[in-house]
Image 1: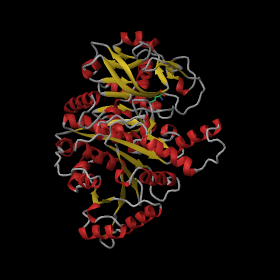
Image 2: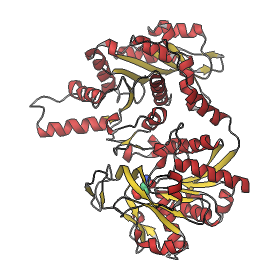
Image 3: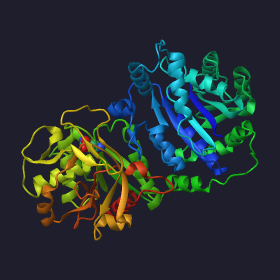
Image 4: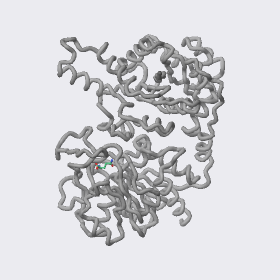
Length: 543
Ligand code: GLN
């Protein structure tokens, strides 16, 4: 039977509960256990798909087509376990389900209430779709004390009671801040947060205390005393040099041993975390550096492109170089500054994006990369805009555009209203239907042309990558572009949707309709990112 570990957060947000959950999962895997990690998000959106990346960071897409929280990306990158739709729930989803059940009359005249209807729905989610997992780690979004998360806290309290306390445990991540004026680490915020948690009926079994320096044993003992936690279960989580060091730090603090001890499992095995020490070493001690310009819209918030940052750094791990990212706000690019702003980049990348704002700046950056032989990587929107750029500047179709920006005579990129899913069903969309959950989402196969650059990179004819888009490149323009050396080198298996474009006589110019960054792992970097960073490394030797 699966054992459950509930991870909550206290004091402030952004303490890295997601990373803590993912790192703990990795340690348990090293002990030979099967793990799953789930995220319970208290906000009312049905999924994060319609939220601004500024508010919520990147939307992570799973193979089975769910738009989920970016923490699921951490989970996959740390464990290699493919996340599923059933691994992320929001209050919005819970209420949507309950309200439609109520409308169908499924509650038989009962008054529908938070307890038991909402909490039951949450409990069902927690234990749903579990096969042979030894551990299921459930991270609860938000911070203890938030109004929104109350039903979730109540649900995990009940779950623990229903399933036998020996089968689940509570880990609480808190902050122990250093106050410069008194020169001391302060334990009070942690005490208060645990007090709040206990008032909701939950006694944490382990405290993971984030701090920017060692927490002296005396202070840890004090936290244990005030919070009713065994003193060796008050574990310090000191800021790491790279996120990939966190599993190593947790092992050194014996987090794995305490968890196994709780569940009365053998904890005597010394696990070898060579995998993480090698990854960390490549990140902390690289041999050289490349600079990649990312031309996008939400460049002020690194979380908006979380998986992309990580995938680029994985490309750096493989090539043993530091990848330094230069964030360029596409709105601010124009003809007179583009050369200056991009001249120091060894590679240029236009990531996924939506809407017209900033698109002209991105097109200028693509033109710069194409005409100056600078490696260019276009992801989703970045591929669509690359085709628009080439239609305008190579084929001379001056009004080439995307129907995403309004009607144009020359919609090089158009709205998809019909496509075939991976299990051969036809999906249809209305031209002006809902925006939420109506994209081509999740993993789809693509067929690669045998003599193409991408075929050499993937070393495979069939690939599977994750998608999240409404629009597609119109292949009516393929013939004319081909004459100019532009190859549509990847297509959907039915041969209808262009998946990849590349330029033959360019050092590295590849646009993909999918999001390869979602599948890259530090211990298994994605082939396109390995190859892109290697091209940027070659370029850096030229300048
Ligand atoms: N806005 C484009 C579309 O919907 C691209 C989406 C993306 O980059 N993920 O097709």
